[in-house]
Image 1 (tube, rainbow, N blue to C red):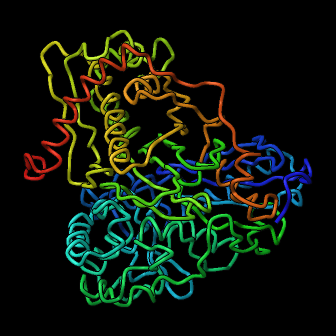
Image 2 (image 1 turned 90 degrees about the horizontal axis):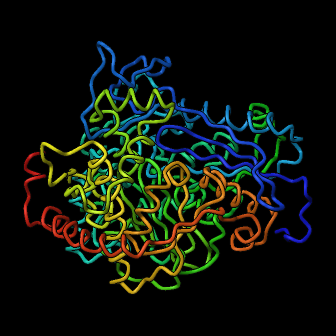
Image 3 (image 1 turned 45 degrees about the vertical axis):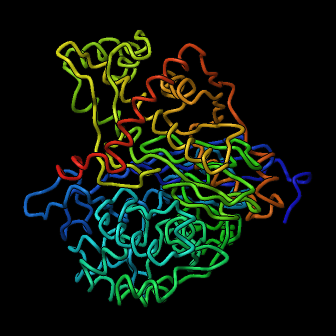
Length: 563
């Protein structure tokens, strides 16, 4: 490993981050964390609503086509070629923009949403690219927000609790439908031919590392949070998997790859990959990571009791701690998965930016759209301006933020959203503000569960596109949570974080902690809670929590019945 005191000023690393609808790359100075160049690539196919043979020909099926099979509403599939093209486009562009010499780029780090995975043949070819399986939805790349496996998640949860499996404690007593194991069980039950034909199931970020290096690796960060693995006990036992479904007894044979840890070198660029990227053959490629987790060192977090909210399409919250504790409904707790030496807890919400975008696209009158257009501002900005003129609670509205189910701490993708208090006088900005407040209330409910488990938040950070785009929302979060929120220095927190891990893998720093201190940094803007707003929100939160528990914990099953 290297030493931070002798890093040449002209050495760089690249971080590549895959989000829900786009990917972005940054080229970063190893010496001080300066971002030299950025590139963003939107996936042409978006989220598929149908599957047909023409997928492999590059046709745009995001809106559906005649003759294609429409997918169920809770399915979320994507086109793997979008990910591959994004990798070559963005990395090549940041190298060209920076005029950087290829030999001065010492490492690449890749992260992606998780669990977003695909089945592969022994040759490494995705099943969805074969004639036999290209029309089968279960052979496609399944996005994190694919919620078709809720029934399987319930079965895994019930059996694990009945058998008192140790792993269930680490995920708060519930298995989430977004994770890999429920999705694999869904494949076994609904498409056994796909499961049988697959030689390997890989997280998409591990697959991209394979394309660059020719090395099949499996980062245990993904496995810990999405496949119920932990370093003490490994994966769930063969006996447990067989009890779920006999075919799952062979699952471990279909999880191939050298196991690697965060900050480790997974391999080096092949000649072919280097040529496509405009880089030098042999450049280090770091072990892949989860998009939220990788952002932690980007703000300089290097120890316990520091939490990071990654606010985007959804929200992930990461909290490092020295202790292992039971926290209801979390998304996992894995040691050494983010900062070696600490347990990293994950929790979050399935809809944040998605929720606000839904409202703007479906519920805003034309007069508001015209006003925003005339003023050359976004509809979001217009709604925030109007909502900012309201006092906390003035609208009489309160909402449950479950438009895409609940990730934490109820862990139920079948829950749905709700707005209470609508009248004939209700205005769009009042609803918009209620939705912003609801996502903040949802985060407060998560923090309360951590406090019940004795895991406290000493410092709170935020990163992601929303953080810089919506200061009004960030102030609401500070007021609702009653905490000071420090913000990231860059909008591309995950891509930047991936570059930090790349610097460690390439030998630029001796540890993730050291790299975080040298490269990570916060921005100049921070949000302090306003006492009178915090008091008002404390009263409103009590109403939110009544609804949260009533509709979310069995008081009334109407949401599930309606679905």
